[in-house]
Image 1 (cartoon, rainbow, N blue to C red):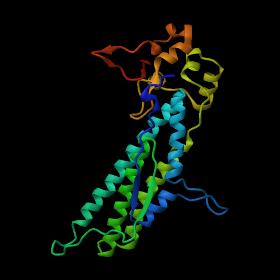
Image 2: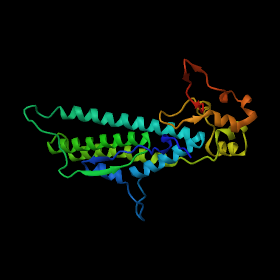
Image 3: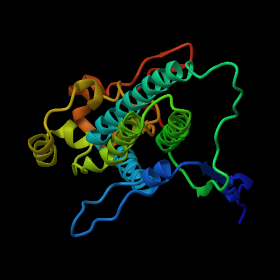
Image 4: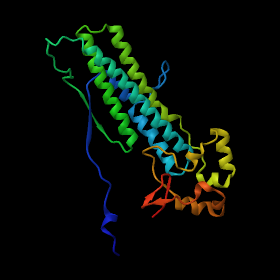
Amino acid sequence: MFYPIESRLGPLRSAMELTLHTFHAVQIWQGRAASEEKTAIIGFGGFLGAIRNVTRGAEQGDPYADLWMLRIQEKLQRCKAELALIQDNLELLMRAFPDAISAEENFSIRPVRLPIVITTQFGYLAMYLLITYDNIVRRLLHAYHVALIDRREMESRIHAGGRLLRGLFGFPRRYRHSGATRVDFAYDNDQARQARKLFGELPMDVLDGTRRADFAPPLVRDRVIEEAGDVVEQLPWLAPAPKANGYQAPGLTTGD
């Protein structure tokens, strides 16, 4: 029997390693296990697992997973903007350091190097924010060392950045699979009605697939249409997406 060469190709892999220089960033990476005295804090690994769960839901046709991917994307963007604001304020602070003194950036003499395996783009975006936080902490420690800020101010700014990342890492775990697909909504069956009852109404542009996160998995329109059967004609949002000069409109894609 003949098997095409491309069918024997495996997925692409590359070895990657993350270097962190501060204890604070390592703590954010690790998270914290629950104990009798303290609740658990989700670390980077827990965030990646939760993102995979949401992505899997979107791949399976759960429109609420698509809504959550949009929410996570917005959370990432807000976190990036707020960390950038902390960086900008820190930049202004460091201008008070005299030009007559030359000083190199402070790095750990024994940084932590962590092997990383990330399978989602959201995971990489979150890792970039963790690196940004690590850099912020390094510079805040330096600013304290050279007496540009006091300890209270340093700790306050470090805590503010850490709170942003902890909030981000725990956010995707709030997603719950609805048990309904776009086909269920096409039929308006019990699964769709139960999902609406539990999770609320979906924005139409999320339900029809025209508004999705930048890195959401593709939806195959042909499969949805085939499974929806004779109700397709009653649902404008399932109509074939128009093409212009070979461009497929965003949202549900064709299977070819």
